[in-house]
Image (spheres, one colour):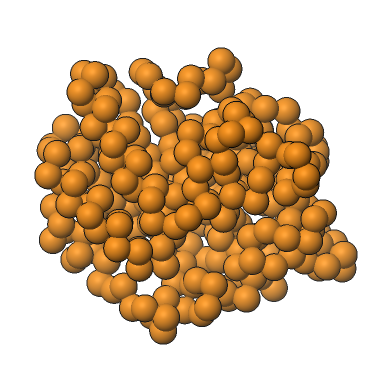
Length: 281
């Protein structure tokens, strides 16, 4: 896809997100909307991946882990629209017996999902293990991507994984942190200040890049730089600055839309701000 096509797909993904959460009056729209540009770029342009047949082991392809699993709406939308399962299945989000649970799980065998990620703080450990596995299998030119929330870094397991990845020189690992400054109870600086992130990651032996996460051109540029930085014996961290709720003005920049659903009127207002030539599910 070219830049304009990626931007158009991102708009459609945002439409999917607000419609999915509205339909069942539950879910997490804020972080999903903020990470939409990154997820769209990753699945439609950057990653080397095969939707069908889905290879659970991810052998000889790039693989992605969503650590902050509550932003499942954006994950499900990009998976469906990149061919992992029918787009129409998005209408089952969070319903009984659906494969699209509120947090991704594996026992429904939904293509594209490799780990359950309802509990925060675990994704970086899994991604580090997968990256080491690719190294041991002598895979070349494949990458392991993982997305984490900034509030999620308050979980201590992340810092053990940071040490592990640096010690094993996992330069095929690219970890992106959604730095939106918000979490369920308020601003991260007030709940548990985790700054300065760059200095902390560098002290743990990682190389660090900065990204404007709601600028599609910059997303593509920085992801290309992250791939180019491989082979230097260090894992890569991308500090991705985003706006929670990006694309829907009344949801932007506040933790209040972390985990609530829009009303009928709010849905109509949101969709009016997200015009798309693509088809809704």
